[in-house]
Amino acid sequence: MRVRLTEHRAMQADASYSSAIPIFDLLEWLESLVDITILAPTNKAIEELEDFGFDFNAVDPIVVQALLTYHVLDGTFEADSFSTIPRIISTLLQPPLVTNVTGGAVAKAYIEDGDAVFESGLQKTAKTVQDDIAFDGGLVHAIDSTLIFPHNVSVTSAVAGLTSFLGAVETAGMVTSIESLADVTIFIPTNEAFKSIRHSDSAKDIGKLVSTLEYHVVPSAVVYSSNLSSSLTTLQGSKLEISTAGDGSIFVNGAKIVTPDLLIYGGVAHVIDEVLMPRDSNASNKCGVADRHDRVSSLLFGDFKIVFWLAMLGLSLVIFRMGSKFAGRLRGLQASHRSGLRADKMSSLEQGRLGLPYGTFGVDKRTGS
Image 1 (cartoon, rainbow, N blue to C red):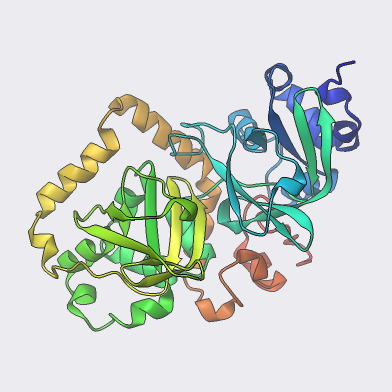
Image 2: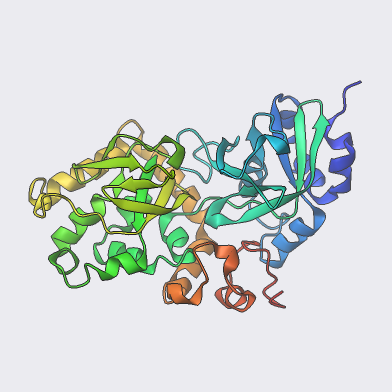
């Protein structure tokens, strides 16, 4: 006997999530799929979303559809198939809706303290409270929080406390060009790493600063840590050399990746402990400002119609409007305010003060708990 999705006991228990599926025209589509895993937030998780201003009845239906689709994994994954090593898993959320990754948005999955954990944008995590619930199309895992979309690199850097990188990108006037790139890999130095170049020409000269930052950006390639190897060609034009130590640590030109696989709107970012310097300190002269502009433009418009790209950008601006508002409020915070890069280690007081959007960290702004 076939067990339909909305008739399943797990979906009935999580009424908020299951009732949203037919309302937003996803039921027929979901029930037609096979070999999928649905991450179903509990009623409490949905209610916490509303506490942060993401009300299913008030938000644009396209955004809600995208969020629900992001909770569907492409494949059947039992909880015990994961390990303590994070694994990148594709979701059914495809561009142009709230992702600028050609292959679609992904989530991370791993085991922590014996439970399956799923990580989404801004390092937001959700833990399974009931797993491996079979239905005719695959599996359902009930989770204690909602996933959120991978955000642009500015918001992601700000929430992670990577304020020096964010400030450098703004100073160089590169925010729009970097955030508009599709299928990108970015290496983000820590605040401590930027201190080492504070008085160098690379920090004082805008042209050299642009060249240095471009050397941290790999266009047209989303390279997760599990696939980092050999060399990568940067936006600046030079190559980065990747190496792996015996203990599994990954290095980029000698800089160690200290936090891998931050999921972002356009791809992925890795946090490194040194600023990468182009071998030719005058590398910016090898391709002038006009050439650099042409290269970025070709990446933005290469195989896409301009009208389509502008429509996609307009939609992303609507979807991330809340993120752009609180990004500025985050920039003044220093890394010392946090116990680490993981956003869920921020204090309840900080989270409430920042006014983080739609249940980002599962903290009620009104109570700070």
